[in-house]
Image 1 (cartoon, rainbow, N blue to C red):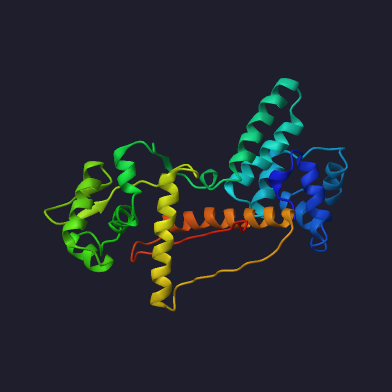
Image 2 (cartoon, helix red, strand yellow):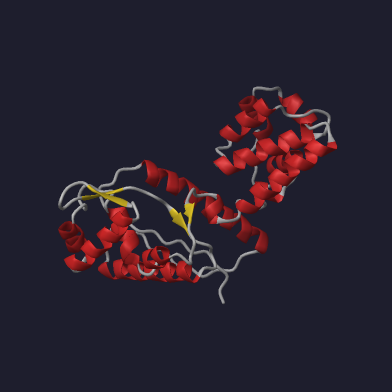
Amino acid sequence: MKTLFDFTDYREFLSYYVSHPQAQRGLRAELAKAMQCQAAYLSQVLNGNAELTEDHAFRLVNHLQFSTTEKEYFVLLVRISRASSHELKTHLRDQAKVIAKAATKVDGRVAAKKLSEDDAFTKYYFGSWIPNTIHVATSSPHYQTAEALAKRLGLPEKKVLECLKALEEHQLVIKKNRNEYTYQGHNFHLPKTSPLEINYQMHTRLQAIKALQASNENDLHVSATFTLGKDEYASLRKLFLDAVEKSHKKIAAGDTEEIFGMCLDLFQVV
């Protein structure tokens, strides 16, 4: 199944969406109701005899529970179709291309501070799972001392304290008193092809293997090998990206009671 970002015309996307074999009966009427317009008007839009307004478009994407990126892209397609000058259409199409390209990458879905991989602290932070884990753990009131962190993570207290001091120097934690350190941000992102990113991903998966061996009944570990069509794979990839974006928002808004990890892989077998 194609995704919204496979289209550069909102009518073509809507026509595909309402006529797809998996589309439910009465979908056109449902969408028209959501947009607060007549079903006949929607038919005129699909036939190229009328345009959606931005208000129509915004009600529609909210009803379809589109992601923030999808909403922005769809409304932009409507603006492109409604634009009267070639110059404006070209300008808006260039914006749409940027959004569509970014939507196929994780960093296009998750807000994060980009780092220089040549920086010495960046190399330290992503050199193993420890600095990042300690950094994030300090957002929990249960893990804001070297003693508590060392006990929870199974690390020497001296090593934890060294890490906390390095994080403090770079304003990623704040020392509240003689013993306590609290989280100070941020979310970081490295290029996908960076050796540091590859190294960090490998360390994170080693932690997942340790968790797998611990057999915690509340953990979730899923692995599968399968065959699939290329178009279906693109749709599945989009589904995973949506899940990453929604998960990130839920994590950011959630409590800080305990430390959890997540690895997500969708890949072509090599």
